[in-house]
Image (cartoon, rainbow, N blue to C red; front, side, top):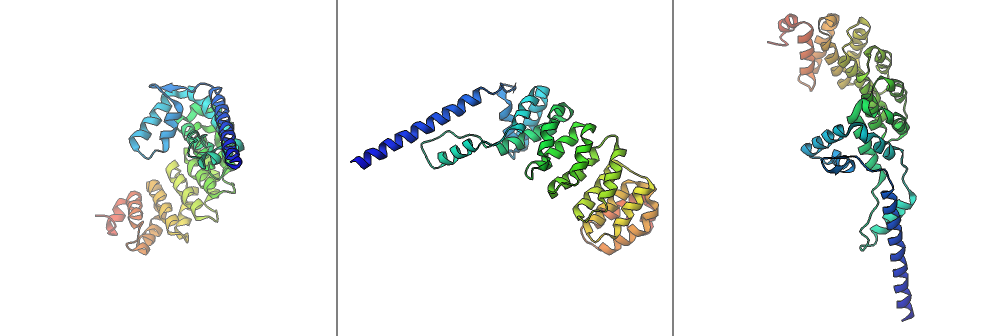
Length: 294
């Protein structure tokens, strides 16, 4: 009987402790600055919808976040600057083992993903969050999202993007070279993108070629660098270099014969159509004579 009584007392003590912990958590949450609202719903509701996998819901969430504008930024910064509490982690682990405990602390990781995505959606309005986003550039889970947000904010983040090109995390390096295409003025992006064309990583070369084409550089320096990539060992890199050359139009006429060789070497493989489109863009008449286009 004493054993049963002790178990009952232990259970009650544990339940009391967990209830007290939950109450502390609720009080702490109540002390946070009031969230901005839109159409009767708090910002947190829209943040959770950003990765809900329903296009209509995600679009509505993005629209709501943009409508909140600068009012949303302080709350987003609070999320980005937060650190996961060991106490909250422990509590959630205990609660998961006890069916009668319904309260859970929301994990920080997904909240920071959503906050970073919201900063990207806000673009220049999210400029006050630059220091918070910069601190995430060494985070393997969040760094690539931070790069995307920083790129959308504006030209003041350019040094952060170029530093991210040397990140130890591949996903962050790739995000940086891909998002350099948003750089304004665009000439600033030319040196780091040309350097990325010489990377040992095929994905870096691939994204650098795409970014150069997207930025519309038609100088002979760029065309020569892209033409050299037509001999790249990676087929995807060769095809995307060809695509970017096509965007240069007649300025890339000197690469026509090499592109024609690439087109023939692919012989029905994926990407041959893109090379054909590049040839037609550079010299429509010559592409027609070669039977590339009708």
